[in-house]
Length: 639
Ligand code: PRX
Image 1 (cartoon, rainbow, N blue to C red):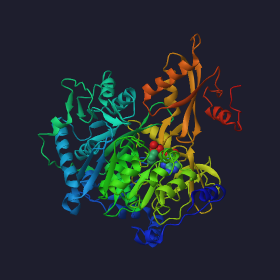
Image 2: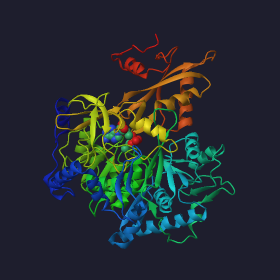
Image 3: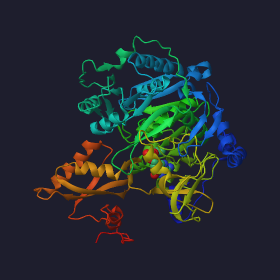
Image 4: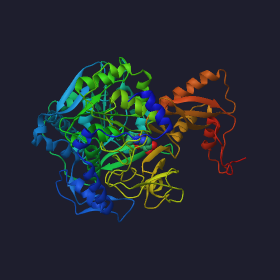
C-alpha cells in the first residue's frame, strides 16, 4: 500500500486492514476457536480462566477459581500452590527447550550475550542461593534498580524463585524517587549495576544508589552491584558486594519455593493522582495465568519465534512481556541496553535483521521518533523475518500506525495495539492476528475480559460517545491491592462504580464494538508512554525555594504524545533577575527530584491560578486556555 494514499484515507474514513490469509490459517487461535472462546467466556468466564490456568504447571491445583467474598479484594485460584518461576524456567529444563536460547542481549557498544534456558536456570539458581545466604526470606522485598542487562532477568527470577518480592525501580528515576520506593517497600537488598551505556555515554548508576541510601533506608543490609561499565565505583564496606563475587561460590541448583497462588510476586510503583506513587501488588497465580494466555494468543507465539519487546524491564510491559511472558511460553526474548538512535537511526532495524526477529512490540512514541528520520533507515535492512508488530503505552495515531505497518511491516504484518495497565498485569483490549484492524483502535476486549464505556452514573454510553473505561468482571492478573494502602485501592478503582474497575481512561466504542482509547481521565500525564502524575511534578516544583504554587497540565506533542507544561506562582519577595535562567533551573530541579522521565517542556509564571472555592486547582481551565478551547463549566470557580 502506498503511504500517502493510506494516510489521506485514514484521515477521512475508517479503514479496515485484513490479516493475510496465511496468518489466519496458521494462527494459534483461529476464528472458530476464537468464537468458541468468546462463547465460553461469556457463558462461564470462570471456566474460561480455569482452562487457561490448566496450561501451566501447579504444585497443587485450586479448590476454587475465584473467591469474591471480600470484593474488591478478589482472590484467584484459591488454595493452589505454584511459583511463576517454575513455569518460566524449571519446567523447560525437562524439555527440548533446555538448550534453546531464552535470552539474546545486546549492549549499546555492540557486545552481546546469549543464554539458553539451561544457562539462565543455573544463573538464577546461583543468585537465588546467594540471596538466601544473605538472609533473604520468603516475603522479603528486594529492590532492583538496574539497566537492561541479562542480570535484571536473572535477579527478578532469583528473587521470585525463593519466594521474595521484587520491586523494580526504573533506572531513569532519581535518587529521591528510589529512596521513597525503598523506604515504602522496606527493602532488605538493593541490586544495581556500576553503570551502563546510553547514547554513547556511561551512566554512573551506583552513584545514584549511594545518594539514595545516605538518608534513611535503614532496612537495606546489602547492595549487590553488577559490573557492567568502566566507571569508578565506590564500594561501601560491609554493605556493598560485587555480584560476581557473590555468586561465584554458589551452587547452580536451588529449590523453587512453593508459593500460595495469592502470595505476592512483585510490587511495582506507578504514578497516581496524588504526589505519592502507588505500590501495585501482583501475585504468583493469577498473574502467570493472565500473562501466559495473553502473550500466547495475541502474539501467536510459535516455537521458532524470536520475540522483541523494546520496553525496559523496569515498567510493567517489561515485567510481563520481556521477562515472565516470553519465558513462560518458552520463546526467545531479546533485550537491548542502549539508545534507539545510537549510533544512528537504524539501530533497531539492524537488530531485527541480525537476529531475525519475528515479533516486534514497541511504543507509539518510539515509532514517531523513528518516523521523523524517514523510511530510508528501515529500508536499509532486511526486515522480512517480521511476522507481527505490536504497540503499547498510549493511543497510536493513524499516521504512525500506517508508517509502522508500511515501512516496518511491509504492509503484511498486523499491528497488535494492546491496551492495558500496570494494574491489569496483562493485555485487556487487544486484537489477535486474525482480527480486522482499524488503525488507532485497540479493537475489542480479549475473551474473559468484560470492558465497557460508561457515563458518570455508570450507564453504558451509545456507540460513538465518549465515556469512562471500566472493566465489569475481575480477571486473574488484576492487581490485588496497593501496598500498605488497601483503602486507597478501594477508593481509586472501585468506589466510583461499585462492582466495576475504573481504569482512569476515557474511551469510546464504535458501531462495531471497537474500543478507541482517548487518554487519561484523571490528572495523570502520559509522556512518551510513561505515566507521571501532575501532583508529583507539582510537588517537585514547590520543593524549590522560588516556588509558592504550581499547576501542571499535559499539552499535545508530536513525538512524545504529551508533554508537561507548568504554571508557577513565585514566592512573594523572591527576586527574579533572569527569568530564563530560573526556568532552566526549575526544569533541572524537577529532573533531579524525579529523574529524567520527568520532563517539563515549558514553564509560565503567573500571579494567580484558577481554583475551585474549596481551593483545588482547576487544571482543566488552564488546559483549555492553553489549547484555545472552550473553557466549559466555571460554576465552581472561585471568582
Ligand atoms: O492511558 C492508558 C495508556 O497507558 C495507561 C497505563 O499506563 P501504565 O500503567 O504505565 O502501563 C503502560 C503499559 C501497559 C493506560 O491507562 N495505554 C496503555 N496502552 C494503551 C494506552 N492507551 C491507548 N492505547 C493503548 N494500547
